[in-house]
Image (cartoon, rainbow, N blue to C red):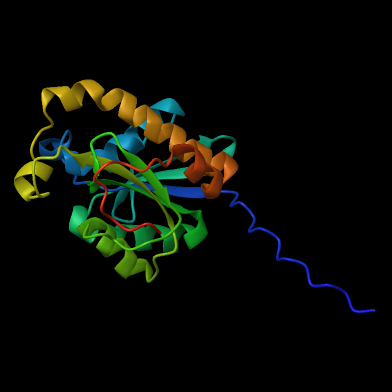
Length: 210
């Protein structure tokens, strides 16, 4: 009797994670739209009792746990356009695999306050993500995109690297709390469930769907 073929089992959820926020080091850039990744990592650290202050592999890192899983939080200190150098160094040093990597970054293709989780995809013109994809040699890793578009034009350096406006500063805490919830859901329940829960089609979004 021929046995019927069964579908492959779902991929196992990783038991540990490397969560990297993209940004630029130094107080000059601390509250600029291009540093949303750094701010999200700082909020994760504050929420889960970690300190991201150890220097290794071109990064500031802090170890702890999120939803009972070991996590290494990281903020590359290479400046945005060379973020991948730090990510690759951390992965090699700590033995992380691609399915254990979560990258958080600002996205001008999403309106301010929008959040989109993806399991893979292109850089969408983001230079930090271009560097990460180039250095790790793949696009198949989880990313959390945080929308910064105010509907006022292109994402030029004058906007990306300028301090946030008053309205954005007032809304920032709630936005970062949502980013923390999204990352925690990825870690505890998996990326597919997190995508279902947090992804919403945002008016005017233009970046890829993958």
